[in-house]
Image 1 (cartoon, rainbow, N blue to C red):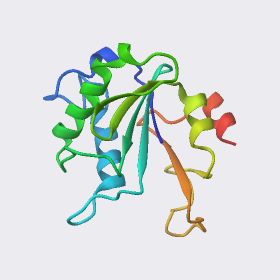
Image 2 (cartoon, rainbow, N blue to C red):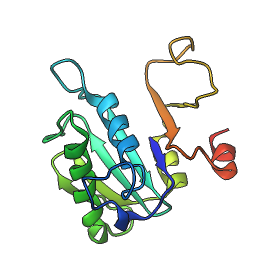
Image 3 (cartoon, rainbow, N blue to C red):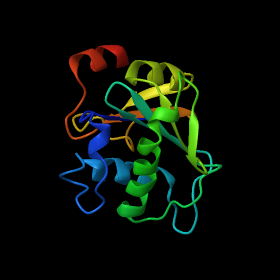
Image 4 (cartoon, rainbow, N blue to C red):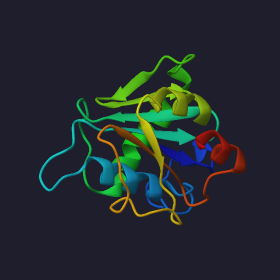
Length: 158
């Protein structure tokens, strides 16, 4: 689960400026790529939730995922397609926008509650390196974009 703080879903339209005009969409694309890609395959047992502002969550489901390529632009295009269809998401009913990618009206707290069935591990640059930590088999990693978690988000994650 990745928290995006720019929150302006309408800004994520330009694929030629992922690190500027689109907020820091490049960070989210790298998180998606790191979660799914193996040398010559995709991890099918992975799910990534990208939480945009306080309104929408884009979900990538590994077992159903199609059209995901290693380059950031194609990943950004999948995210953009999902965000463009955000008005189709009614309540907490997800709308599949491309195979394996959907969007749902769900904020950070509700998304965290949804994924918290597993052990939740917060990744932070000042935390213990994950390779040195004792991590159980089924785990949900939660990280923030370049802005870091807010005080309220830290409290919810505690």
